[in-house]
Image (cartoon, rainbow, N blue to C red; front, side, top):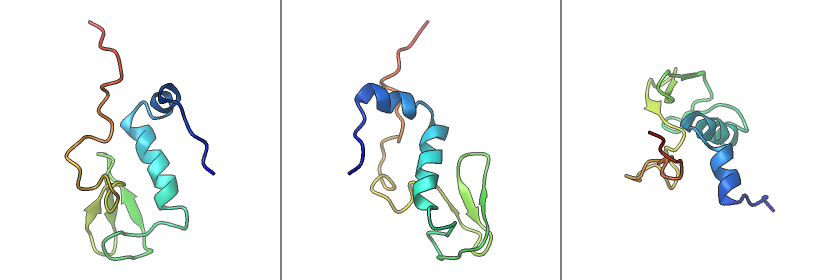
Length: 86
């Protein structure tokens, strides 16, 4: 059974989009890198905008592609829990 995180622990662990992406990367690529579009096990390149590109089909994708969050209009990390200073 997976360990449950409190809201505070969750927001600390996933405080940035990069932290979320790295976590999703570990889950998606646990059996090796593969393209969700063509299924290729070829090289997957990480782009500077936190997206990925398949070297075989040339298509781009994000870690949330093909997940329940993929078609969502809601940002994956809205930052609404973080205080605004100023």
